[in-house]
Image (cartoon, rainbow, N blue to C red; front, side, top):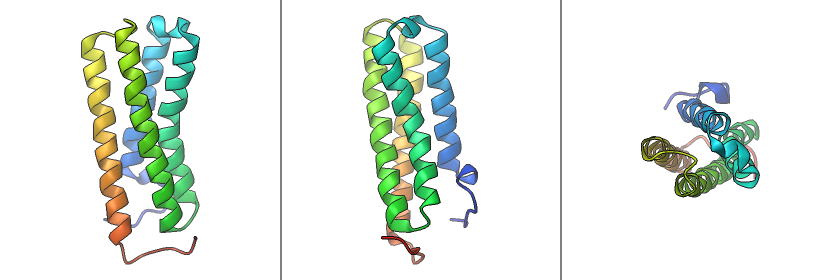
Length: 128
């Protein structure tokens, strides 16, 4: 894996921003915009996926980065659960649910692989 100088250049971060944008699109273009609590929860959890990647990268050490990547993975799982609630409450159709659920699952897999890579990396960084 190449050395990256910014979190924006990480493929997993790019995918997380697309996922977050996709969630925002369903918030603004569906009845979800009237389901205040669920809207705020899924907006927060999807944003947390990308935010934790950025924060972990900014910490400067692999151990902290791994910890924040695991928070990101947890937030992505949380988004999956909230997507299911969106579907069950008829805020999104089955096609939209499947598409976003697949994106979330792909992100979880990418984050898991990245975590495993960092755990095995010779380059440890200085924090924690």
